[in-house]
Amino acid sequence: MKKIKTALAAALFSLQFFCGFAELNYIEIDSISNAPIVKVKSLNDFEGLISKNNVSTALLQTSASVLFINIGQTYFSFPLNYYTNISDYKTGESLGFKNGNEYYEAKKLELPTSELYYYYKQNSFKSSADSIDANKNNFPNSSDYYASKSLGYDKYSDYKDYLEWTEKNFKSKDDWENAKKKGFSNSQQFYDSEANGFANATDYQTARNLGFTKNEDYKTYNVVIKELEKIAKNKDCEKKQAIIYYFIQQLPKEEFSLGVLSSELKKNYIASDEATRKTITHFVREQNSIGQAANSYGYGRTRHYENDYSQINGDELFSESTLRTFFAKVEPKELGSYSGKSEIFKKK
Image 1 (cartoon, rainbow, N blue to C red):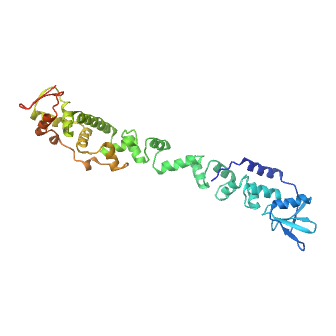
Image 2: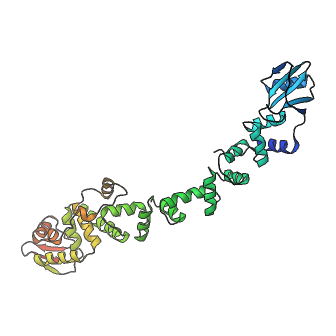
């Protein structure tokens, strides 16, 4: 819908409304008979005949909406298309009206342009003033205009926003806008994210893909995984060996036989929080990076940790045989000393 901004057109309309056009005297007639009649197609030509022959009176056949002028013994005619005079005809044509009937109805309704008039006629406005207000505020139709008004919205842009955020089940426009800023299009995910402390959709979805529902658990994952990857890189060791190193460094300064060390590490692993144990399992069994894992399962889908992995247990990580291999390959001298002969580890 084209918004009406044509000041010139409105000015022309107003001029005709208040002043009229009086270049000719018009006499209404029923018909002309027994006289030669020449039909003129162009208004410019018709006005040229009036000017050259100083015609001051025109005959208007209202039933057929045809204008006649007499020059000598010949009548010249021009179809006025239901306008009552040439001035109105020219104004109505310039404003885009289809005929005089619509032009005069628009004047009566105080609708200054044809666009506004047809906008009013094609809808079901209660008044022409409502149609002007609706057009000014960019409403496509009367239904949306009155529905918006009933909700307290004056502009179509505000009403359009209302339709969008309510259709997507957001509780308020502020929530909808906040969700968009954080990367959410789904209200359920947004509110779940808010309830569980996530800052944005990326963190929320990555955590869900990894099986974490709370941001605190996801933070634990990031801290632990970063430390494990650092150990694996610096010590150039396997993932399970990095985990052994991670837990040994948390032990108190004591001496441990291999059997006691195995028991202590298992106990500490079991006593660690669920998020840490999940992270350990991911670290051992996940082959892809976080980003690859999220992409492979698709944004917007929840990857259930329990369905992907059975949680790794302490026996798998900290058996005595596994510890022997660890001390043989890793030699964590910065953590303490180990005697392969006595199988005693002394924590620094």
